[in-house]
Length: 218
Image (cartoon, rainbow, N blue to C red; front, side, top):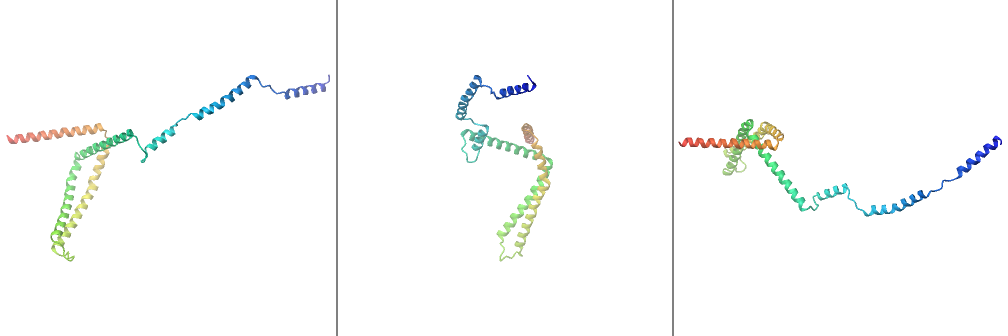
């Protein structure tokens, strides 16, 4: 056999092998039938089952918290209890704030002067109103004695009232801010100790007053 015949024979054998297709085995056919049979029930099962996602629960909770949404009895009671707790907490801290201001010596010094300025302003206002009521100005003649005194008292009242507000803003407000910052850093336990000390000091003062009264009677 020549070389040419050998090459042609190899080509013919290769073309026959490439033209053949791999037969489908029974196992593969069964797998295809099984997967096709399982596909439809899985879809039907997924369509029949209703699931609630986290987003759905969150949306329902947000909807119940809207102003116009209807709330359950438990939700209303919980909200009332929360508001009551917040009010009690605010009242408790306001009392502590006032107590800390009363115990501040710098604030106590400014308080007396502030009340003096404010008191003079209100007294001058009352005097001006009384003079105007008792001695009314006729024909817009404020040159009379009563008219001059009434206007002078009114001007004096404005001066002292404005001075009291300026004094409060400049001297007293910084002290209140410092006390407020100090109180914000205190826990409820510290505030309770503060009230306990004040109560103890008050009892001691009352006991000292009673002892002084008893000594005077003797």
